[in-house]
Amino acid sequence: MKLKEARDAYYDYSRKASDIIRYLGLAGLGIIWIFRVQTANGISLSKELTLPTILLILSLVLDLLQYIAGTIIWGLFHRSKEKKGVKENEEIEAPRQLNWPTIIFFWAKFFSIIIAYYLIFSHLFTIFR
Image (tube, rainbow, N blue to C red; front, side, top):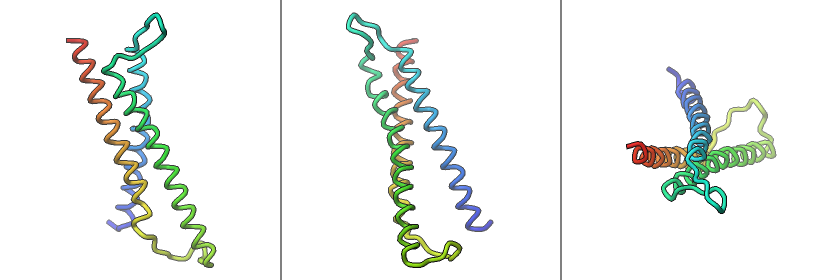
């Protein structure tokens, strides 16, 4: 296996994981919507579902921030190399730190969705006991 193949596998799996996290975030909000409470003042959530709702929304925001950060970082990096006269097909080396913000956002959204679903399932298990 070549190092490029390992990197490509990493990109494929992280891209797919991001897609699944996004779907889980939206599905989780749908699950919470099903268990909303209708009151005289309108619709509200049970206290136990407030934190999972916040975490699901946070995971979606972190997903967006991951891609915005990557776009800005790699766009600026490309532009700086372009201004220095680096040709399109020229080999360059990028500092590892450029990926740190997107990696942090990736893992933060992962843990956010995991905790949200843990809280949702905990709540549902207490309801259906």
